[in-house]
Image (cartoon, rainbow, N blue to C red; front, side, top):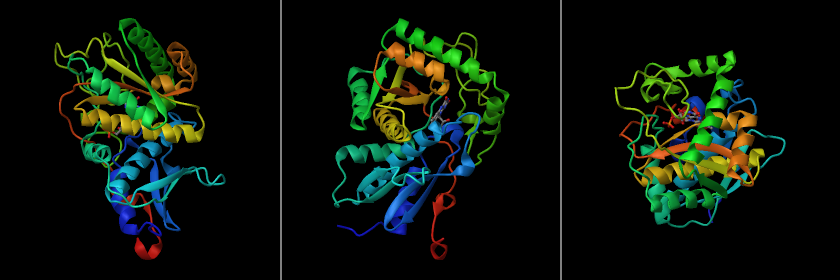
Length: 324
Ligand SMILES: Cc1cc2nc3c(=O)[nH]c(=O)nc-3n(C[C@H](O)[C@H](O)[C@H](O)COP(=O)(O)O)c2cc1C
């Protein structure tokens, strides 16, 4: 058994961890080595007070980064045992990873790891081709493996009912000037290392759209290139809604997204109905499931695209002075 992780292992694994998704691509994470364990922390300077007052989004993003970290360590033959929120007095420490018995990565870990650099949020319209049953099963299984559930909305009426809840939540959020200002502040015209590049924003919203899209400054769509009429909408949920449940949900989210990428599928996230408490409750009741919805995804076959930028790994590592 290893005695502890090294700075080299931390740096290599964190390089993969930062590829995780985050609200507005704020990248709210930091990573450090403490007593031989790798720790994932929230960065208090990267909060979104208007969009994410409770910190739910930051914890989900941190959980997604943690999942990449787990995969990277497993690929390096040094898989981790994970403890979530290990220090009650330090709530910003989301997880602590210590070395488990060394072993070879499983085929599943290898294919999910290979999907990390290829995954990106695809906000453009998808092809109308349906997602085959075996891929749907794999997506559900990915969520279950990470102790969450994934509800795929089946049929036009279920999708329409969801769309109404999502549009209502979108309207509520858009009424708040602080929320709008925060979103606009994270739109990027160039290739800055954080924020949402205009080029990744998808087309500008139009009245005929079924689902609401966050306005990140997209351009007018080409005539006839509307969104797919029957999108596959997937709701990810966790057993409860504590801070730990949200980190668990973030790991499940990333496993679902990487599984989709591995299956040749694209996905985008829409979290407006999660962010508005009354909409989240409506969504929960409409699904008739125990637990709490934590994220909504639109999944399908999309055009190729590009991963969005990230800050360099050195900006997110907390190293002892002599190693920095
Ligand atoms: C908690 C959370 C909520 C998100 N909500 C939305 C959303 O409502 N609309 C959207 O277009 N993207 C949403 N995203 C996706 C992020 O904007 C995206 O991950 C980020 O810009 C980085 O881009 P990438 O996913 O292409 O790597 C969300 C991501 C997370 C983790």
